[in-house]
Image (tube, rainbow, N blue to C red; front, top):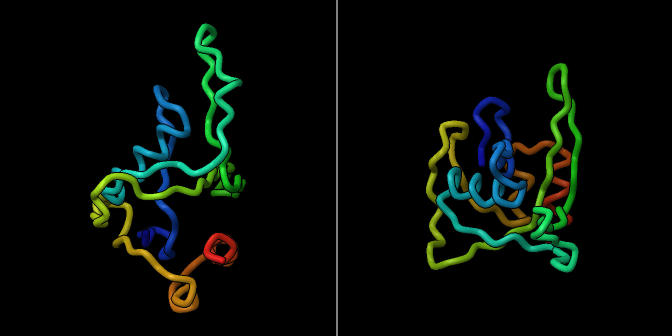
Length: 126
């Protein structure tokens, strides 16, 4: 997504609401910002869940980043995902971005990215 304020391409994202888990927030945010239904790829050890005590197991993130934003820190929990369902058409639905698009590894030099995000994308794509 092309972030309006930062003028760079980033992955979809947002905040976890009080009533949801990080996994649920990820699925919701991607749907809201792109129109796509996704499935999280990553390890998840269901043997550690405990319904009696309301303990669920989350997917392991691909990477966790901590970045300074003004006077506080943001924790970016990034996951690998795949598109699920039959709808594979991107839909620009966010007022926080100028647009959305898929890119291949060969296109990354021609778009505005944070240097660490470019490294992350190259790692994932290779």
